[in-house]
Image (tube, rainbow, N blue to C red; front, side):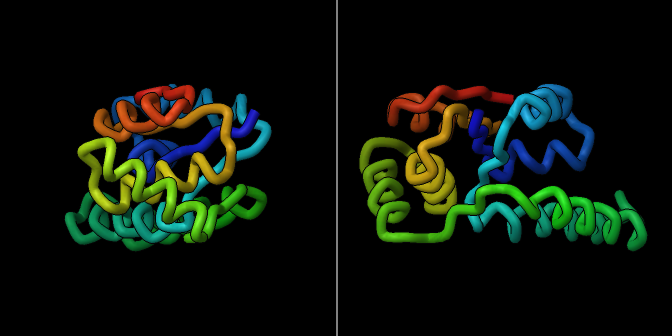
Length: 137
């Protein structure tokens, strides 16, 4: 089963918070992890913020980043393609979304995923409207 995670969901794989257990469950059930290319800088940004706020040490930050990069070695990472842009624009026209959220939606549609996992309520509504099976964490 191809499971797409937006940044708000996939970061929960590394940072324990509400929804972490459900994200871990979907990661285990996935035959393929799917992400948008923008997820990686967004997740690393979250790790950097944790370090700036002294919530993780420099050593912990390095471990988080290394684990992320190892985990995505065999993931399907969707680039920004004309198809992704087309789906993103349609998502923006039909929903109240931020641009980056629309790119996550467009990426999931372009990858033809089975499940879309997000912690963002508006993105979940847009993904449902676009015909995706949605799990809100």
